[in-house]
Length: 396
Image (tube, rainbow, N blue to C red; front, side, top):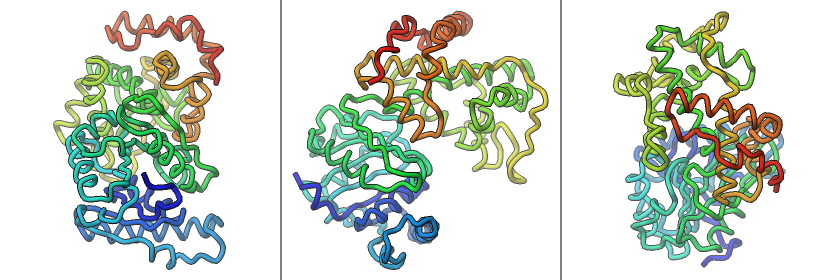
């Protein structure tokens, strides 16, 4: 196994918004970076974005003194040939589409063509690292490293091992994470020694979509405008935008695909509802296609929040996240709730559920029981640790 000090060459596969963010912070940390994608023009556009990002970092005083942007960019190469791009790689980040078969193919190809010491880090937000590494020739060298958008601003990275990942590889992944700069401050590189699909943050963020998808279907059946659903959410000021607008912004297909994955991994309760399914089948995926819940063809839609539907309770999302956080504690994915709240704050800029949960767990447990009764979504039934309040003594 290579010593951490000898890791010089990093390859980033996938030049989307996540990939180029990882590439930028790796360059800022002093590594040589090769960025890989399928088309030259995609790579050229992304290199220009990275250079622009470096200029912004320089203005904020986040680049080392005396280091020019041209010197940094001289350490960045591009390639459309994955096999040759990883020939001298010490560490590879994969940030491609969230489809298991594609991630497995790339993992296998990288480990077949890279040096024996090379570490493969998947940025998956959904799949088990064990499954990604299953058919590779070096599963002990495969880890998960899940970043948050935008990578240069959100200071958390979750580092997780698979069943066959060596402890030394996990150590190196955590240390690499710590070395990657963040414009807001020091990066939090979180070591997760027991596998959990969704890591920490997405384990908390995805179950509320069971509730929201159910609300979408109820609203559609009753002919309630989407604006009124978003008004329900924003009236409580717990989230930056309503769930319909947010789903459009992130991509309807993103929510749909993750729900389908969670449906297989966790419970059929994650199966996407009729509204999400119909939007995807019609190709109305939100902002990126011009239509989703709202019409984006003329730019950001004007959403009037003057009338509430009165059917969505934003507090339910916090109750659901507290329940999922308690499940992480019960499963020994983490030893205390502080790290869960820290990941949520540094990764998503949202407060974690445990602060308010300590005061509201009895009320929230009752809310979840009542929702399960009317919806039959038994995955959301409060776990024993939430119902009892036993998590209160499990801060660290």
